[in-house]
Image 1 (tube, rainbow, N blue to C red):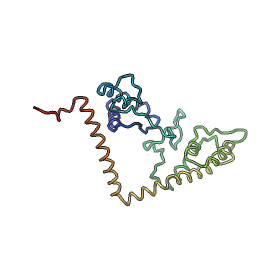
Image 2: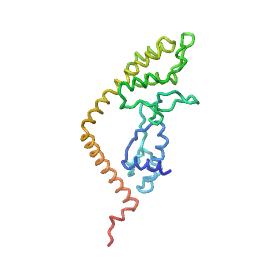
Image 3: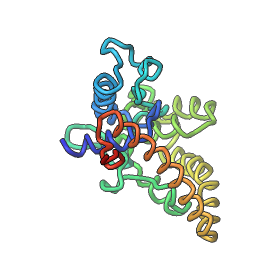
Image 4: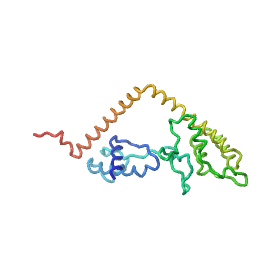
Length: 232
């Protein structure tokens, strides 16, 4: 129980309106929302029937945060599904991830090993293959902005009129095009480490200011600011 509460504290200390999370983290965020409601009710006199979006307006310190889930709720990994046929999400610990730091050669090697439905090797007009649960096409639909190519190629793929290799080569091109600006920016900061330090210092300073303000408010309203109280 300690870890979820610690996570909630990390969020609430900055009093955000929204929190970027993966779809699998949304249930955990509900604890944070419940804690915020309870604190606002108990110490800031916010009525318990106050709608979530009205808590701050009603005098509460903490907004009731909303999850901000990206357009890709969950990205599956590059490896094959488990025994239950489920694809695990992309994860460093599972060694099934493409990293932002990967070179073009590494990206190429990983995508060439990308799992595809074995049935695709025997697809035909009489035996069409499904695109469902096929990482190759999940990635194309997410990252390939050439929607016309995706539409035409996927229709060919279903009936075995385009190879896995050709589709993987296209995906390699797409992913490397996406990552190249990130690689260049990473290289720039590697050559200019002081800029990174300055950014971290600036961000830390702003974060500390907000965190200290939140702590001051909550200590005052909870009656825990006795170190600042007069001894007279």
